[in-house]
Image (cartoon, rainbow, N blue to C red; front, side):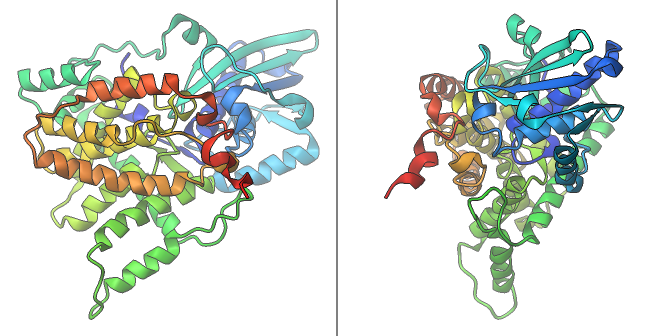
Length: 458
């Protein structure tokens, strides 16, 4: 299974990569299949069935609306975010759905959007879309949203083939041990090795340009988050904090104003809060590797770029390449889906990725980069995914800020050592996988346990 840096980092839409981005991609893919089979103009009705975690927290994560936008032919990276709610509301009023922008059909939300309290066999994030014509069923497909915006269909799930890309990489690896061995054998850094693998798909110039485009999207997200105020949608009445914190930190930096010695850490908190508040509001996001953990990588990289006067675009490229190597290992050997292994798979993986990226651009050896990633992941093991109200607001927004600081600390600790450490990254990833398997389902993005039910306490 060949995974690219641009599989780990994808521009999309909030609030969730698995519950919003994945379902939108599934809807758009379904329309593409109808078009390819020349069935689109025979469709008279479409039924959507959401299962498991997609059903349990689907409304809070806008899974239902995202699927419908996908059926309209929209994709997460190009959909006009400002127009989504208006288009959905119009569809609800008219009861008419423009399938792929070409075929208008009746769509009765109460009948055709079904949230079912049951699981499909392969993954908790399962959904089935069925199209009907004049004489009955035309086409049906089941999709699984397996985290980070990745989707697979029923055939891929049954075969165990989780990715259709069979590209042969020059330096393929399935474990951190293999990765370190390749780096040592070929005298390469982790980012250099990843760059050579990426060249199987794109030229070096294209890779660099696309990474910087991703970084630009992250910067845009942070800047928008810094300038927005008010209450986040969803009903919890969670107030945005990034704008006020930004004003405070800017005041500290003014001449003749003595700032806190912890102001650098507060900037890290600020960047993470800004991103995850935008995510919670359904804004334009970069999955890193998921939306629920999208604030960690940009917060750490913003920290480096702000406090290192010599920082440049080369650092950005190397950061993303090294971070992706760790994300690939987490995805291959465990999961980045909160519905599958809890929040350790999202925030834990993102913390490890950010720690690895920062260590790489601070001059760490491959062994030190692996150590940084292991520290970042190890201290998020067992983390549950129990969003209050099914919304990625409490505890998700603060959790990203805390994990971003952890990632910086992990990188600094690894640089103080020689790369030798007791627990390997491979073992930490296996532990994440096994812990996720042992974790009760109510702690896996269902909002049926933990903090998600704490509001009922007297």
